[in-house]
Length: 620
Image 1 (cartoon, rainbow, N blue to C red):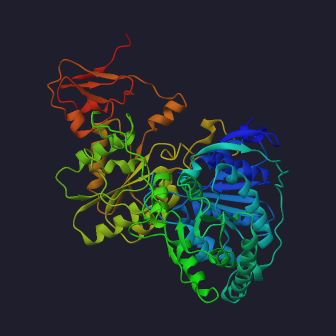
Image 2 (cartoon, helix red, strand yellow):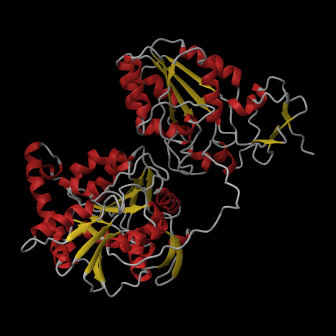
């Protein structure tokens, strides 16, 4: 049985932050969850998916985030405790549903997890999703530790049902991927069947209904503010004249900085865990008696702006110094760390502080750069190579999309010129093809195609745009950990209850694409010929490049690993390295070699070697 199901009350367990969120949801009696995978939230959905296979809990990987939110909007309004999980940019996809769901509200508890990614470890931006709470008018809670993540989920569900509104549960990468000791609570019995009572004048937001619902939302925000003022997750420690206001993981850095700088007697700290609506009275009371205040928050000056406004509103208008995001203090860029917070606290409060001297590394050789790269045997590399060869002599623009294949923009493949968000490769191809005379070749993965590529393709066909779309079908959602998508045959994974996989080829043809080619990218010559045929077509043509992800194949023991080696026939042209850039290649003693441990035997390099010097390695 899954470890998050077996844990007993009061038992201590070492959990990842994302696992703690799952356990907290189980303890709260969650019965339904839906997600589209995205780091740093992926382990939440992975654990839910595993748990759903051995219990009456329902989980699904939805086609995209808005579908996931729409699903749980229905289950929560049938009285069932539900959760929706996504990374921060996924909230952009779900926002259309989110804004109106705030008006409609919920009957059963609904918690929406948004995992923000300061420093962009695995994301295209650093957007601060606290603003979604302010934009939608929905309550926001933020844990500061792994243990609190577990505990705060139950609080969020209770809060949701009390207000009859969804609650946004915001985390950041540091918390999602930290581990900590968690004291487990009781698991409530799940209620898996509910009922929906028809109330069209509350659930169908035509303008006359929405006007009434907006007024209701504002009243709920007032109720939420009252709760926030007295929430145990908004607390003050210390009694000094210097004030620090913080949230999330920043609280841990602040706590340690105050201790390390030996200024505990001079500082009081306000930690906000229920951070929207902001507890204005609590903050005003905190400011009273402070000589100066520092606001410590990753991302945008979300709290800082509110605190300054509250200071102005306070009796007689507080004129104390309140700072946070400033040139010599905290930046809106990237992730915080203990050393940074310690330095800024010391600087702002004019505390003597001598930072630790960095370790002298002058005698250590410089660490070689290791840029991210597609894996050995990745079919995307073969596809990019074939497209590059097929399009030689053409001026091209290559919009790309979200996935492992985004790395194709790096040399030596250099196949990726423009990139915005999930599904944008197709929409931007429409624009480039309309206003330039260059050949447009766009790339999108199988999971991303289902997520948000189909509508762009429909648009392209209807408006008669002229470009070639390459759909990279590697049989899984590879970048986030091999989660399934609608094109995966779940029977091969020994999972029941799913329909037959949705055929990408059938979908493409159904929307009106007449030129469709399916290639096996490890067959280079045939792939190049098929791609050239597609490139010569006027209108929308589609190449479906179908080959399983090498890591996915290895995971399910489907990888027939037959490594290659470089024989003495090699004349050191290095076409293999200079045009493919496979990580299995190494250069030793000025000669090209293949690491047999890394090589998976895709044979692409053997097919392009001008001397036929790359041969299968014999087992002995």
